[in-house]
Each structure stands twice: as structure tokens, then as C-alpha cells.
Length: 294
Image (cartoon, rainbow, N blue to C red; front, side, top):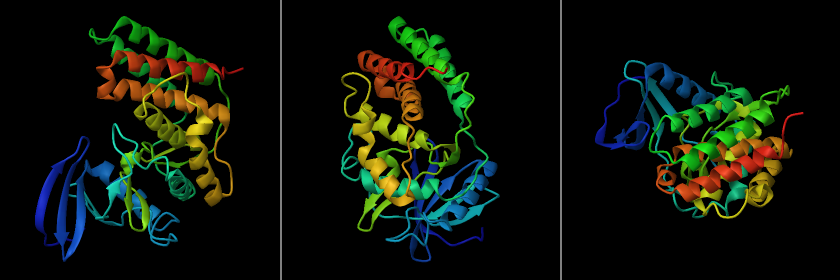
């Protein structure tokens, strides 16, 4: 990337990556730092996405920030700054429910982009990640016994659903962490942010991540999540853009189980709320147990 003059630089340290907000030649840009190989791969994928139906030619405006350059010496990836506010955030779903149709439109463009990346998240790798999470908790002496048992049961339920599954589902480019805080709302509509976790995965994986985030944020009350109620508008928006219904019910519910387990493992707020954590993991188990592999 050519060296450019910059002014007014500020630094904001986000949980995953250092981010600088700068002005270059009168325009606002975002500079995010990566390990060089990782950043190069993300920039290449974003460049291909910019040329896809998600990017510059999208009707109504781009559904992503424009990638501007990558510095192979420093790992700095530069994108255009996009104005707006997050669709939601940890602890509040905000407008995520009311704008789910628009989210489905964007997701269909991402999944239909035809872009391919090296990172693959298939069913065996997801099942392994669930087992690793359970093992991490078992190694932590502060984890309550009931929580350990619940995670072990959930891991077994996912294994029973997928371990002997011989299906080879279609994989598409997925966001990998689709949640309201990864979308901005502005006067033109919605824009997807944060392409750090792009991966080849089943369509249902992004849908499940969205549903898990909403269900837990809204209180994680009651039995297993009602996937139809959570995802109805999202699926409608997706189908209107892609001209196909995206979700296989069995695949979606096991993916939702995996997403709930990951939430229960990684959200700091749940580590200090063992009762809610148990509800989330038990709901995951109930979902996965509906679909044991034959």
C-alpha cells in the first residue's frame, strides 16, 4: 500500500484488534492491525467481496466498507470509514428484531458472493471446538460441577448428531460471528462490519449465531429457543434476495446448539451467572438431542 499522509489519528483498542481512526486526504478511514499473513488474507477476501453483490454495485449502497489498502510490512489494513450506529450491542438487541429482513438481505449477498477463503468450519471441526470448550472448563477449578456436567452432556449430544454424519452440506462464505454489533445502521440502510472471521461454512451457521445471540441477550428464559420465531424475518429477507429458503431445520437446530454452547463458554457475563449459563447449555442439549445421527 502506498504511504499516505494522515492527520488527526486516534487509537482505540478493541478486544481483538488495535484500530486507528484517521483522516487521509480529507476522507475518514479505519486502520486495523493484523499479523501480516492474516491481514493479507482478509484484505484479499474483502477486495473480492467489494466486487461482489455485497459491495460497490449493491442496489441501495454497499453493504460493507470499501477496502482501500493493505501494508504488507506492518499488517495494517485500511478501509473507508462508514457512519452509523451498531444495530445492537451486548445486553441490548435494540433494532435487531425489527430490521431482521434487511439483515437477511445482506446475509444472502454475502453467502452468494462466490468468494472462497481457506478457513473452513465444517461439522467435525465445530464438534471438536465444543469438546475443547468442555475440556477448558474442566481444567478450571472454579467451574461449578453442575456447569461441567451440563457442558459434557451438551458435547455428547452434538457428537451424537454429527460424529457419524456422512452428509457433505454445501458451504458458502460465512461471516463467522454474525450479531447485531457487527452491523451498522445509517441513513442508507445496514452495513456489515468485522470480516476477521470469514470462513467457509454451512448457511445455517450464520443464522444460528444470530439466533443464539438474540435469544441469550433477550434473557435465555424458558426451554430451547423457538427457531422459527427467532429467525422468521431473517429467513424471509434471505429468501427474498437469494430466491431460496436457506435453512434445513435439523442442521439449523444443531448449529444453534453449537452456537449456544460457544456463547455459554465465551461470554464473560455468563461466567458470573451460573443459573443462566446452565439454562443456555441445557437448551443447547435439548436442541441437539432432537436430531441424533442415524
